[in-house]
Length: 177
Image (cartoon, rainbow, N blue to C red; front, side, top):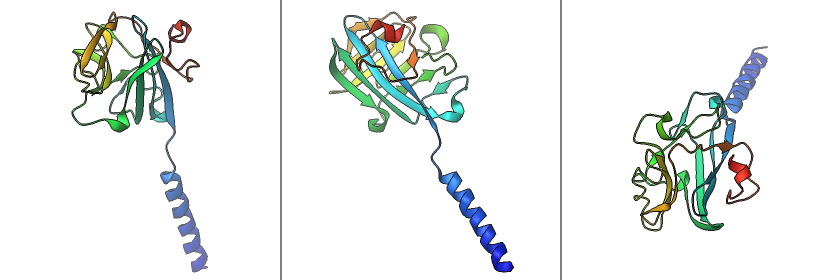
């Protein structure tokens, strides 16, 4: 009888450990952005499912992130959280209930999004790519240079998608409206 009780406790413990070791569910959000002059960006991010209805998601909540920038459908560069170096800018705000990356004055601070590009969009490094959205513009950094011609006005809405875009470079206006 004692052996059965111990076996039942061991089985219960094994089940609890197995369930706690199971991977947590993640929400995947697809990123599509249209800039000026043929510049576009696509990507994706993930965060824990338990934050699906949170007020705000920040860089501290994101578990996977990747973006690729394009000009006229040709890839310019990419950046991912997996490749992030300590010196690289990583600042993100996302409103999951609205499925929007807040822009302009919706979030206090000098810039709303800094994805390997700070408020000047010049710190993405040689060979680097980044995106910045702040109080002056939404734009790209490429090889440590601000691509001013990629910019959109700060208050331009920047929505997320719940499904992968069918055009990799997000150049279809229907994807972002």
